[in-house]
Image (cartoon, rainbow, N blue to C red):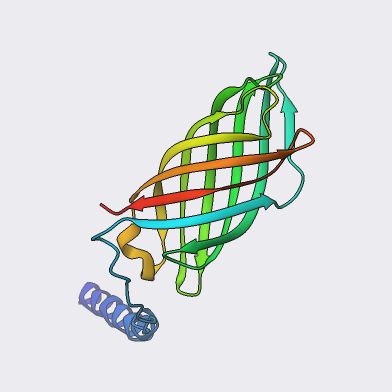
Length: 178
């Protein structure tokens, strides 16, 4: 008899907890209308500049790591801001052709999405610009941009230089929903 009352007490206690937790768990979340973005590529124009000084580290084997945060406007299919982190690992001094990775976030009035692109960075000797050709993915989205989740990203951009220092990247980002 003692066991049955103990089991019954346990069920009553659980029911009481669910009665308290249930309304908390069932709170209404704001509904967001997803943009219909699955039928055509999304094209964005962007221009970024440094958001602070770069971090450069020389590795004991002679290679160099380079990281810099960037920020700037984005326009085209959406208006907003793009922020990014540029990351490179190259020989020191950097060769004219090497790999680059950019992790980015686009923020608009409707929400945001995050992704990356990686590819080639080519700056001919003495040139005042470098070309980036890269591909990537959208990895995280807010509700309005649901159709962009895991979309492919293609970037064609140029990095400008003044007195041997980069002043920013500008180009086109094509996002191809799956």
